[in-house]
Image 1 (cartoon, rainbow, N blue to C red):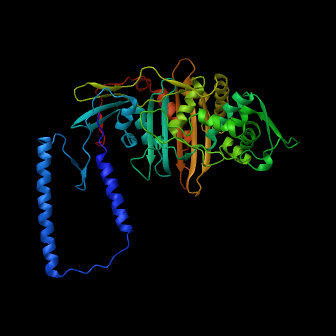
Image 2: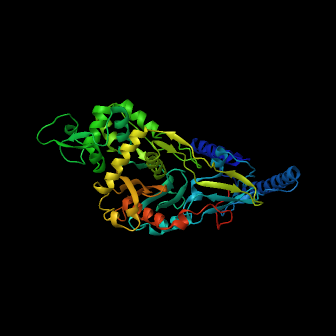
Image 3: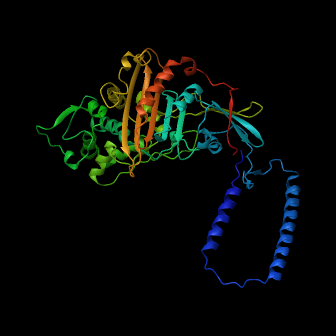
Length: 472
């Protein structure tokens, strides 16, 4: 497979040369006389025509006739021709072939991808019915960004990648990692507390003051008549900042928090079918910052919804994070398969099975008695949700400019009498008014998925409808 980068390099060189010339001091030049100006123009036109003739002759001589003609952009400018693609393709070549823009506003399972004068048929793992249902339910009035990811927990197959970005039609927030993780990072802190400090879901923890503040006076071991003592699962379910702040500052510290973040995949590219920016993690040498990081009380720790789904899947998979898959296979026009995803999912251990079981309990408490209880009220009597084991974690934080409110839900749902499990990760950036909340989207996704067994169990097909993607 050939991916020519000459044109891009040429453009960058030209751009740098123009910038350099523009920076030079302006020199005084004498204006040419009218008759000289006419002569110069005539000479220049003749020279350009001569160059064009030689260029055309050389092009035909070297290529016979162009097999892959240079494409023209809408503005009439020459662009790089679509590369010729031959298989089999490996994962790295797949990443060079695909990009985020191809999966924005996608409504079909398959994509028609122009390449090398032909068309490649890209078969995704998406469930079109679920994908379209979620796209149709997105609140575009009150949200700037929405990203909804639904994924099979065990296989890592992405079933929905429903995104909305008011500022850029080609951007899919499901795949972007610049959104503050907020209290979703408490999943990482809770797992580290179990693995590194011997905590369990029932371990007693104490805090003074309000639940959702993080004052330095709350970050001590002081116990008095105003101290509240609760199990760790309740602190997680209610997202109590001072409890997790104390875990970060007084128990884990900078080295263990750094190690936990690395284990959970922060500051690393996900092993995915597309090249994506990694979720970010920063921590300073200041103990109060350790508390901020551990509780999610900061904007420097960022997360993508796709990464959030991987974290939720690890909770169900005994602490193993599955490699996520979006592309099922790629075939050329003759039906020759150039790429096929591995039938066996790959895993990486990011926490112990004991920690995963404890976090699973904590996430279930979030649904029954914690911050998501209002959204999931009555789920135990719902004809669909009552047959499911459901867990989750919420998070929210304002943007630094205070014009957005980031709202998160990361969770899972699985059959009580069956093995089918999915994870859901939702990020919503609300503007002036709060529209549909992240936990509401998650409940809708779970309900629709488990209420539609035909689409749920559908296997990849070879001849589905095709959505045209841009030429590459």
